[in-house]
Image (cartoon, rainbow, N blue to C red; front, side):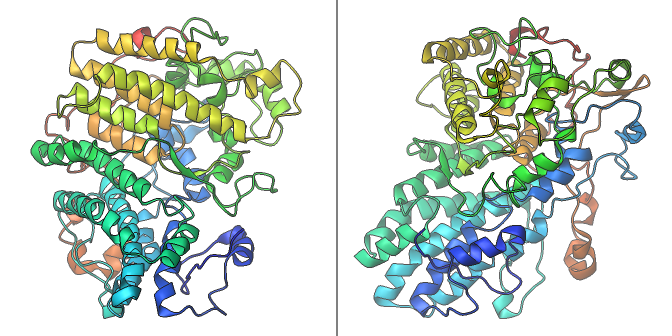
Length: 583
């Protein structure tokens, strides 16, 4: 691997089990002191490789697979029966016995892990002429990362300190919380400015500086056109979020952004993780899945949305993504876990159990009575870091078109069709990376490492989804199908983003938890601020303390949606194949 500059300041970054590998791959900052015109490149790479940004941290997945975002947004669950008595308090959002935000520390992490941005800003003040022209682009690229991180935090916490943040070098550490809508508008405008300036900044760089950028940019290899497209994709995503409360502002950014969007999935190889290690995924999110296989079973609602006719997978009828997203059961078919514990407990007690680990694919195949998220595609895999996928872009454009926000290149139905095709291609590519299970005998091997269906089969299924979508006349019925497709595409890759879409749109509808006839339908609207804010930023925290709970909606939830439930009116049937019209 080519040597690149990676500037790490004490206390700025912890690499856990991968630290030794990183220190061997990158120049050690304790013994290397770069010239001033080389600091910004190293700080930019430092920002790219921060845990919990593009490289996801396993602790979040490990904790949240219990009573966190995964469970409460219908993405993953234990095989729950009455043996787990704490689920009786699933709906308790007051005493903290239900939902938990353990493992999520993005509020603090944003400010500590994006210090590179402030340091680059300060260092640019010391540069002029050629040195400035060769380095200012790193400030713009790091600003894109910082802007994305801020919007991600707004989506979780609502008001956050933003305008006055990153003034540590001036001795300012505690600043006011800003209005979330103001933050959104400011960042969307900033991303527009960056999009307009990046090509000119790159053109002014010296030839040797462009070569260095290609080495430092381990994500997009110095391809500025892709950075422009990525910034536009972010504008599209967050303008869609904004559209329910500031339609005109959202339209202006969407109209401009869709002129130049990514043409490929923006993913990149993480340089220091190997699925061949003792702990698959090392310190990344996949290790969380590996250690929590017993909490990563697939809810019936998701299985039903991919498997329509019979419990066994039927090519040409069922969702072509099913074999690479889910593990089959011991019956060579697909069965989910329900949130109706009254129905599920007798089945578990009668012997329909499962292998709770992620270390023996044969044992899982022979013992599992319910489907888990695929160990092949997820836990035992060198999955790349992802910035944006074509499937998500398609679904964002579908929402824009369906709501008539602006004119898009295709109809909403055609965007949905594209989403299914791009999503299928993406997940088969992810499954193909993994070598896990390659020595398993038939019939299991074909089920866990399936051959990709023909383009005709994929397109035929995509047409079915398009037809079902276009058959709906009401926008809410269309949004249910659209958000189901987003759930199926993004799934475990970015669950917190999916949770944001659930809170914003109230789709797709979830299954209520039923415990000894008690039905629970809690609506988690946001995360609470860390206790450190109460202790250290008291003056400004008190001004937003009234919203510091799990039930105050984020600003982008339209007033007409705030009283709308996340949940279905009826239970999801325990058997597969009985949900009509793809919803």
